[in-house]
Every structure is written in C-alpha cells, then in structure tokens.
Image (tube, rainbow, N blue to C red; front, side, top):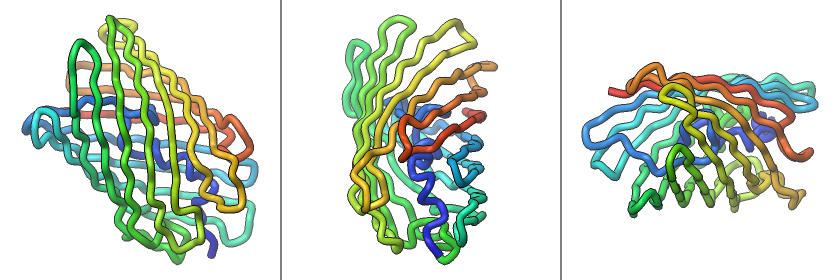
Length: 243
C-alpha cells in the first residue's frame, strides 16, 4: 500500500502546534502549572480524495516561557485511487515550545518536536519511522494587531520513499476586533513530500477565533490551496479549554 495520506502532507502542520485554525504558530506559552486542551476537526478535498481529521492536543506549562505538549490525530481518507483509502490514528507528536526572547511586543521562540511511529503504516497511516522537526517562531504585537512568522525544517524519516528533508515558511496576521472576536489570515509554502517534483505546496487561510471567556475559545477557518500540489479546499473548526 502507498502512503494513504501523502495527498495531504500540507494538512499536517495544522493538526498540531499552532493556535487553531492557524498553521503559523505564536510564541505564547501557558505559564507555570497551567493546562490547555485543544480539540479540532478539518475536512479537506483534493481532485481525487477527501480527508477528515480530528486532533487532540494537551499542553502543560513547565515554566512561564516553556511548554510541553502531546498531540494525537485521527484521520479518515477516502480516495478514488486504488489502495489509497485509510482510517485510524496517525503518529502522535510530542514537543516543546520555548520563548527565548521578549521585549516591547517582539518575541522569538523555538518549537522542536518528534513524531513517534505508532500508527499502522501498513495501512498507509503515519511514517513508519520517527520524524524530527524544528520551527523558529517570531511574533510582533502592536495595539490590536499581531504579526507571526515561522520557518521550519522536518527530517521526514519514512518507509514510503517520500522526500526526507522538508522545509516550510509561513506568515500570519491577527486583528483583535473586540474582546470576543479575533480575525486572522495565514499564508505559506512547504516542501512537497513527493521526491519526483520540486514544486512546493502553497496555501492561504482565513478564519476567526471567538472567545467565550478567558478559559474557552471557539474557532473556524477556511484554507485554499495555491497550486496543484496542495489541497483544493479545507474547512476547519475547533475549541480550546484552559485551566
């Protein structure tokens, strides 16, 4: 069986790490002893396939500037191509977010992570081997506007013959309309996992976060692929709880 999820490599960054529905992550951390739980879903389409993803992520603040997290996605892919449909848990990811510097609204951070090969790669789920990623984070906030930029590298170890060295870059803007509503837009490119093409995958995303209170957020988003290497459409929704 070929890797069932290779059609949706661009989706994986949105499954974990960033504040949903963003792909680009901020430098914010939970604070010492604080918890955060995120649950989100995503429905995506390509010319020959449709995918649904449900992701759970639990984050704990080790220090004011350091978080640890674990993320577990469940995915279902229906494809018109032979031997390319699958459903089940994908590889879980554990990682850290460390805010290195913060001054006058500007901050920088690092987000290293590892995906553990626990999914059933014989059914095209997961990579079959541990993968390692590092992402550099930048955030600048002035008034109600926040600008985010990420650059990343993934050592994409796998059993499918996919490209092993993957690079990504993205940028996002958030505007806090009022105490309840934050509008956002995101844009980025990443390496194509297909070793037979050098064309990257591009995306653009718009969405909003609605804060019920300081402990609960609801969100939704729409993502559009910018070229034939990326997904066509993706709709997202999620919830975040803090305590």
